[in-house]
Length: 319
Ligand code: NAD
Ligand code: UDP
Image (cartoon, rainbow, N blue to C red; front, side, top):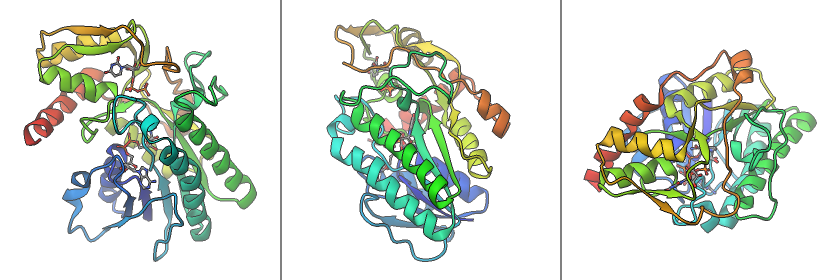
C-alpha cells in the first residue's frame, strides 16, 4: 500500500511510519512541525519508500500519485498548560487540526478510495462517569472547559469520519488511543511520562498535580502501533479502544519512576491540581480490540519504562 501519514514527525506518527515501512509499504509523511521534530524522521532520509511533505493539514491537501491509505495523526496532544506544546496554548491550531484537518484528510481518502484511519482519543470520554471506559460510553465532556479545544475537535472528527463512511461510503476506522508512552516522546511536551523521567534523571522531586490519586493506564508504543496496524488492515468501521488496561495512580507511578531511575529526591505535591477537567480515572475496556483484532498489550509497564528511560537519557545527553 501507499499510505499518507499526517503528524509523521511526532511521537506516534514517526513510530507508525517505521512500522508501515517495515511491513513493506510506501509512506508519504506530512507534518508542519508545530509539536513534532525533524530528528524523529532523520533515520528515514534516503529510504526510497519514504517521502515527506511539509504542510499544515488545516489547508487543502494535495498529494501527487495514488494513495491506498490515509492515517490522520496530526494534532497537538499534550494537555499541560505549563508546556508551550500543550494544546491549551495552541487552542485554535488544535481545533483546526481536528476539524479542518480531518475534513481535508477524509477528502483525500474519498478521492483515492483509500482506507482511512483517524487517531481519536480517550479524551472523548471526558472525565468519565463509567469505569472502565467501553466504546459504547458517550462520555462526560465539558464543551467549553480548558480541554474542550482538544476533546470537542476529536469528537467532531469522529462524527465527520462516520459521516464520510455513511454518506460517501469511505472505508474508515477510528482508534481511541489511551495514554501511550515510549521513545520519541518530546522531552518538553509536558505529559506525565516525559515530565517525571526528566525530573528523575535530573535528580529532582517529581511534580504530582493535586493529591496524586488520579489514575491513568499506560500503554507502551510498540503495543499501540501493533493494534493500529491490525485495525488499519481490518475491515472494522466502529471505534476501537487501544490501550493498556493496567490502572496506576500518579502517586504509584511516581514511586515506580523514582525506583527505576534510582532517584532519591522523592515527590512534590503541587497543591493545585492541573486544573479543571483533569480526568480522575482512566482505564480502557479493551474487550472489543481482543474480539475484533485479536489484540492485547504485551509489554509490562516497568519494561516499557526501562526502554523509555534509556531513550530520554540519550536525548538529554545530546541536548
Ligand atoms: P505529537 O505532538 O508527538 O505528534 C503530533 C504531530 O502532529 C506533530 O509532529 C505535529 O507537528 C503534527 N501536527 C500538529 N498539527 C499539525 C497540522 N496542522 N498540520 C500538520 N502537522 C501537524 O503527539 P502524539 O502523542 O504523537 O499524538 C499523535 C496523535 O495521537 C494525535 O492526533 C493525538 O491526539 C493522538 N493521541 C495520542 C495519545 C498519546 O498518548 N500519545 C493519546 C490519545 C490520542
Ligand atoms: N501529572 C502530574 N505531574 C506532571 C504531569 C502530569 O501529576 O508533571 C498528572 C496530570 O495531572 C494527570 C496525569 O498526570 O492527572 C496524566 O497527565 P498527562 O499530561 O500525561 O496526560 P492526560 O492523561 O491528562 O491527557
